[in-house]
Length: 400
Image (cartoon, rainbow, N blue to C red; front, side, top):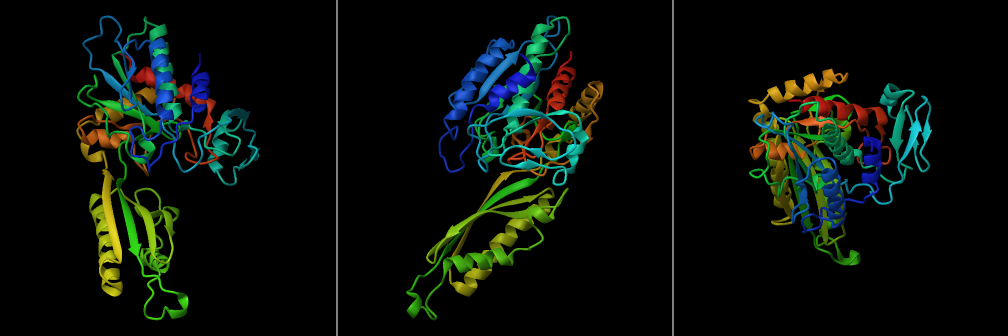
């Protein structure tokens, strides 16, 4: 079985996570894929593979005989897909990119919109039919890890260290590390295989928080509303307009932070805004949270106490602080990519991974590319060559 076969099998499982769920994992389908992956890992040589009560899949590929004393290396990926776009009934297909618009069916994948398509001219791409996401985030990472394990098992003449594997649920909703068994994990350092374009190595990520803004209005019949009505929906609009208009995802890049309005709901009596707050710089991150709270206090001084209620909650922090003493992980990843014929590119993550949380919990864990592009949307794709190359990278990385 090839890494392509595995990937196409895995994306057929609907594993969309649900941020409104209180269960672990947030959706039952993740355990369906988890059970399948246990058998995949066993067939790839991880005979101790199992799924725990929370849906985390663990397995260990023993070192080649004579290399058992080398430190184990962890490889981690996540099973869920983002709830922003449907992950149900994915119709993946392989097409050759010839430099012109690709008609997916319900959408167009165009180099005018995505100029980096031209980097893959003449290559086979795995795409959707334009109605769903593809799921390369992060089933590509899972497929690459399982395939690497299978190839190590098939070639015992090529020495490798112990490889500790974990596939997590609910990464897309920020809960992927919640129940990760760090103390029981056989490796003391690891990589998440959960990145984008081939060659990317990431050890800096956003500091992240969520902000829920509730607005409690007063609804009066419009005919008698003068000086009495407080329209919660209009007050929500005022809150939105009070935030810096240029500090949104659509206006920022690189290390620049933002406020992102994820959703809005409400009527005259009650409205709710859900934001995420992001910044690479910890001081600027703290200032962004303070701005939200100060704005809430100001608007309450205008419209009355408890008209606006803000709940701000930290999600994860920049793992750079925890990886400063483990830069050998970055250098090893660079060397592995170069040995596989891939040009390494160290870039900051404009997001987060399970590795960010795990690094703060004592498992240093930078992030490696999977090769996928346009995650979380109907234009998502992954080049076949990138899947194959990342398997080579993992084989180089796990060499004894």
